Amino acid sequence: MSDKAQIEPTPAKLETTKTTEAPAKLETTETIEVSAKLETAETTEPEPEPEHKSAFFQAVGILPGEVSFEEGSIMSKVTVGGKEYPLLFKPRLMSAMVALKLEIKQSGVSTQRLIVYPKVMHFPKQDQPHQLAFQLVGFEKDPASSAISMQLEDFEFKLSGLWQFIPVCRVPVISVFRNFDEAIHQNLKKLDEAIAAKKKVNFMKATHVPLIWKDSPFKPFRFNPKLEKEEQGRPLFLQLKAKFIPEKNGFEFVALLAPPLEKAPKFFKASNDDKATVQKEKRKNATPSKAKATPSKSKSKPAQAKPKPRPVKAQQESAE
Image 1: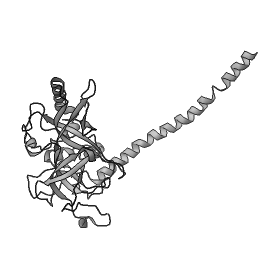
Image 2: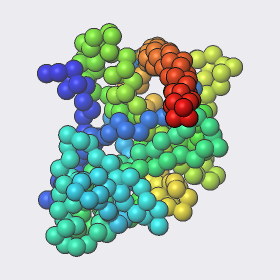
Image 3: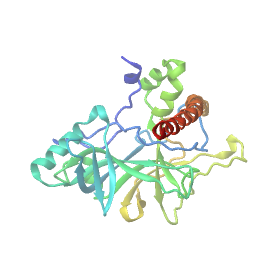
Image 4: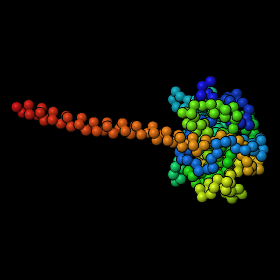
């Protein structure tokens, strides 16, 4: 088994049953990343056992929208409330997207009821709004065809994660990390040191879903650089229902699905050392490209100067 295959994420635990159109479980993509270092308390070891073993990290919902495909491709977008969002899929598990395109072609109905994961891209500047995309899990003709549909209405999402602030977002977020798996943990430990840091960081990326929750009785965790690690405390693990509001390009709290937990389920999280190694490697790789660009510019100057005498000489010969 290759290194890549060894660290492929396991499917998120969805409370769905398989539909005839597409599989009910799909692994999350790594196309969206947070482009700033999070200032949350980092640990290299898995989190302690949760208070309720049935709890796990999750972000999934029902999104009705008009799906459009690129000509001759399965690349697609979904339009919701007049706004267009990328509709993503895992390349090696594209059966759901292929089935969706076939369904739309055969039925002539482009508006479909999709089961999706929310994917969020944040930017370093807080005044720069986040960008949303959705990853296809499946689609349904019958609203009662899966367990997730029986739990959620249209536009509703089940979010289970850490309730906290991150530096790149003005409002608090539900941070959805990868659920811990011992077999994957052992495979990660076997990776070659030269490539381990990058693969770990990419694999362990979390999705940070902004959540508007007015008058929340639970204070979101906020990292305080002035406090020692043991004084920081830890974010609560919340399991809740939220509604996607296209007009606000975000999610609003609807209801709690379970009491808050002080100890989150085990999850994967990249260490500060691995993040620093990846950043250092990026800077190292960027330096040579800049250095190569400098000589090419200096060589271009004489090349532009050489043609100048030729027109002059030609004009003199012509005059003679």
